[in-house]
Length: 399
Image (cartoon, rainbow, N blue to C red):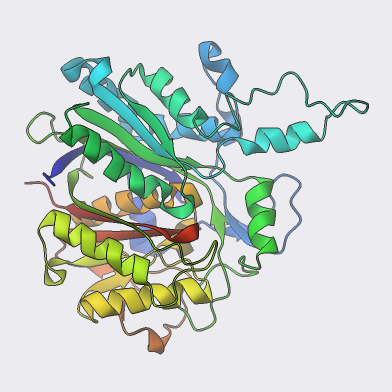
């Protein structure tokens, strides 16, 4: 593929709002996780909750889209002046030539969960005020973002669990290669809800402690929420708009379809995705400087990923998982960690792995618990979802 310029990016997680809050937290090795106190949930687990969502006011013209997920999206669009950078792109290309490609897993399902508490006692009908289109519908966050930014180009939501907002980079790159659009807003927004928290708990995949990726005592995930966005443009058509700019060099996707929720035990699909990313970037395993692992802190996921990474890269490439800092933000995780990769490129800083106390020695990779300065010109970011839906992104420094 031809490299694409990432001319702007932004990130909102439990670590804070905007790039500077995240670069400081990553340098300090901090985690934003806390004991679960979300809504009416009563679970012994830890979560990554974004501050300030309930204080966000939706524009009156877009009131149909008022839900936690879209308020989080709006919060994210304003961080780092990202919405302004998109509008500058609209001035360059026209609204019909800028697309929107977003990932989410549960969208605004919290609104439906709350609505079920207020069903008609006789008919069981949900309250008429519930807008499925503006909340629960997976396309809601993409439609809201498109309308808020005044975009008219191709728009779609990808919902493939934890690979959702990594795969949007690949989808946008294909449409740009076809000439359908000249630029694209890509990213992911996923917010806390009861379905996610109780659902993962029922699968026995949530931990009662802050998650510990690649630790021999790891026992599950900590669920978080986040909004992460990036602006993709053709080379030479857009200025570098902030200091997290970089290049999308390669994308790789695979579907091993091994199991509905468990990864292929040898990491087959993960390796295929990484190999495809290297191939599209025209790079070799030896060209990688840092790997941001999917690193969920479940026993099976980390073991499978380590087999895939060690089989392809050996122990030559530094790796870490930042999910101990942000929690697993599910449909937003791919975009969150892509932006973390962009920060690594911009700052020459290899993030550590908050939450990991000891490294499981059977893993066979160069896993970094502590962050540190490093020469980083290429980053591989892994995202692997339920059902064997896998995606790997390769990012590089600005030319």
